[in-house]
Image (cartoon, rainbow, N blue to C red):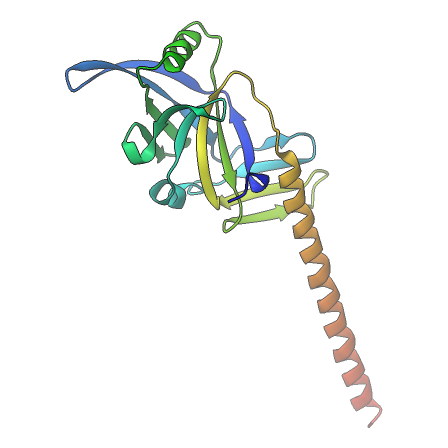
Length: 203
């Protein structure tokens, strides 16, 4: 899947816990990378809401990594390895990362303890997923029912929306399909009207 199709979202929710793991004390980072049912403004272009269950397929299927700042050179965990655990509850997409003994992870843990970093993010694509758009309000509302693919979750120092244009392309695709549907529906209505008129005139 091309990075050109990847969207990024950010939520402020990250904290550390110390847990005993096999006799050793492990540092576990916990938080939520997404929250269900809440509307988020995406760059002022549209609003977005994620439905419960949006990640359920991806969690059991995709090889998801946990990263620092979306950088694959700074891997913090991996679902396949069991060092990244993802689940859905009533609140959102819950993340647990057993941090490795690396300098990046140690520095990150210190910054989280100090309150310097407290945000989590996730990267996804909608190709193969399911979404709806509602343009009845002043700003379009996108509802994500199923993500297509969940690439990674990240701990990030600052939230941003670097791939908003991809969401805008998705909105334009929806509008194009709506125009096509409306045109076809209008053509069908005209054809039916012509058929009725011809019968009325006895043609």
